[in-house]
Image (cartoon, rainbow, N blue to C red; front, side, top):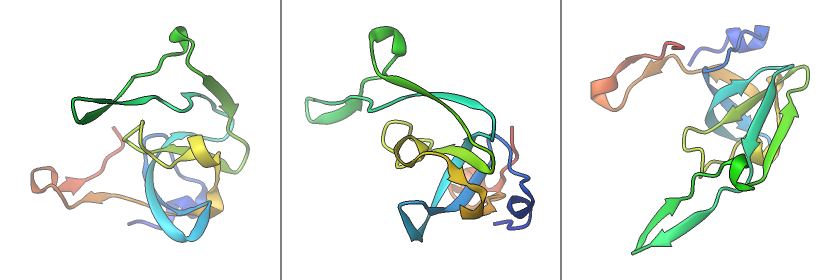
Length: 123
């Protein structure tokens, strides 16, 4: 984990960051940055999860289907983060924008799975 660039506001969209959970500051979480200060972010709130023959699946929500979408402008000094599992993640959709001060570092190296071992480059 690299800890220097977040201290200077050098976080970009797509970066994977380690941050303190805004709801429980003693706990850390890893999320992807999807919005920077001044960005307008639109997201679907409360996607629907259903059970089907014992397996759970998520209904992919769409504002066109009447699902609730929200738009927020990320305030100065904050970022918007989301988990890669969009429909089951504790992220900015639940706790809002994250102040830079809560970002502890950026991930730069993947260890597992072994076939993906190597650097995280913002692609």
